[in-house]
Every structure is written in structure tokens, then in C-alpha cells.
Image (cartoon, rainbow, N blue to C red; front, top):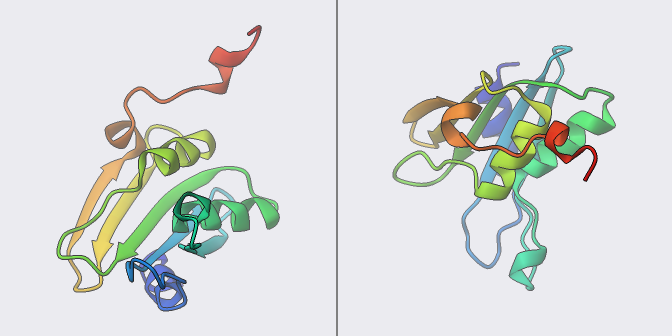
Length: 130
């Protein structure tokens, strides 16, 4: 299954009763596995979960630790990039060269790398000795 199809398939299962803004994400792990996630809202807005974070959790649960590629889809008029927190989470498990395709349900796509999306990413190597 392609990342595009996986993200589009899971999108319909997002739980977004408050914003009605559903997001689906699919990640290809370096080992070839495809892992999906959806946004899950909560009445306490900051307690919700982003689709990208859900896909990362599924990847880790499956035993993979490196991201090779990302595809994110939302029902919006233009492609929507991952939020700042998810950019950092994606960068934690993917190198700066990892491609992130942002798409709309209508088929518009924009592709960027993690370096484009988060040029000043935190790096765990900088945290040693802190």
C-alpha cells in the first residue's frame, strides 16, 4: 500500500468532533513498514493527539525507530504542514533529508524535507552532558 493511500484510508477515522478538522498520517519506517495515525481531539484541546504523533507511536510499537518518508492529508483548501511539535517529533526519528508530503483530500500536494520544515531542530546529541 502506498503512503498516500494509507493516509487517505485512515483519515476518515480521525476523531475531531470539536474542530471537524480531520488529519490522517502515514509513515514509512526505514524497515519498510507503513504506520498510520489520526488526530484525536479531546474537550481539553491541548490534551488531543496529532495524526503524526499517532503514526510515530504505531511505528515505535511495531519495532521500527527510523522514519524514511511521511505523508499527511487533511480536508483543507491547501496542504497543511505538521504543527511545530510534530515537526520536532518527526525529526527525532527522521533525518533532515526525509520527505514530508502534505496533501489535501482534493489531491493537491506539497513536498518538503524535514530540514525545510524545521531548520533549527533540537538534536538529542546537543542534550548530552546537560
